[in-house]
Length: 107
Image (cartoon, rainbow, N blue to C red):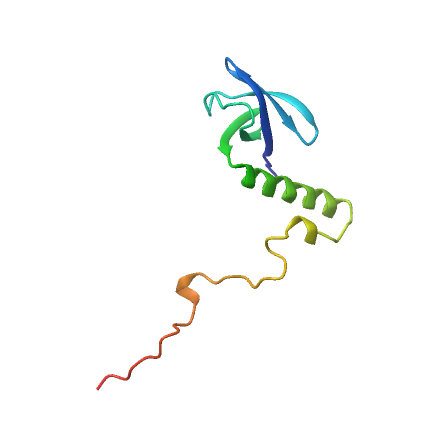
């Protein structure tokens, strides 16, 4: 399985950037994303930044990775990691919803 890791840029210079992740600091290749400013979030896979991401998306990804880690260790409680999803019904795509306006029979 291929999984990217969100990392926050500490400093960037040349073709690399020093980034902070949940497991410490890493030097990554930033060739594909240009020169992100300190504080920017990057999705990193195999030592290279693949995309610049929003802080919100980074935190969602970090929470999802933590949920995966918990599941792999046998834990079954994840609600704290998916607060935006807990307690709501899934939303159907528009093409699967029932129209709310009544149909008028044709003459």
